[in-house]
Image (tube, rainbow, N blue to C red; front, side, top):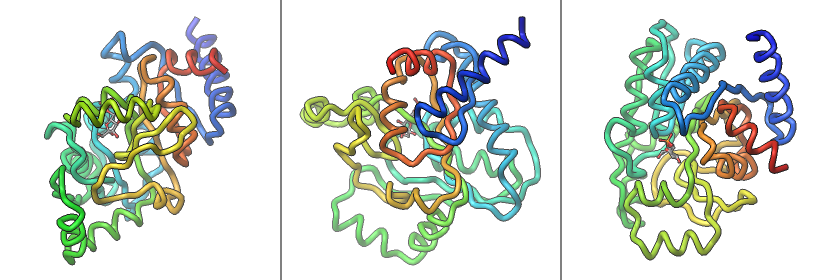
Length: 253
Ligand code: F6P
């Protein structure tokens, strides 16, 4: 019955949180790889959590990707009075899944303002440095680093590298380095070591330790290993995932 199922999920949430060393895990039933409604439920659960924590005046930073986009879609309209910003600029997503787009969408739903980072995808170090030194970019970066909460997606390394059209040689190199996960523009191996970092602006991994609450949203059994790896490599506090991921991680302990 339903109550039983909910209790069962509650237990799994605690077991997974203990195993990955997280403060909190929310699990929705099902497998997002198999059913688009599960991804919707993930977005909904994550939206509820985010809304329960945010207070007027907070800064929320978000990454791109289809899962975080679903969270924005599922966010009910309220008047929280917050500021939303993209966590990182220019990491090669289609417009509708870009962090900028999601930030503006969330700001509209949450009754807030937004900032954008219009960083092109491939910049030389020189161009990147001069971009970062622009006063309005500096100001935006300072706001982003002052975020109280970050919400981010997690992907599998090689599929993400392909989605970003990285050259085949780079993809081979990543595979050779054992890259299995991607988050925030960083590629991680199984143990959570960074094997490659994209050259772009915004939050660096080292900024995350200053942020009060880091919320990862990712589901679908195919992401189970990637999610474990990122849980080792990033200081995540909260994970919103699905039961297929939870079962796969707990079975492979
Ligand atoms: O490109 C932004 C990003 O958040 C990546 O860091 C992550 O790997 C990916 O999107 C997740 O995308 P999706 O939710 O579509 O699987």
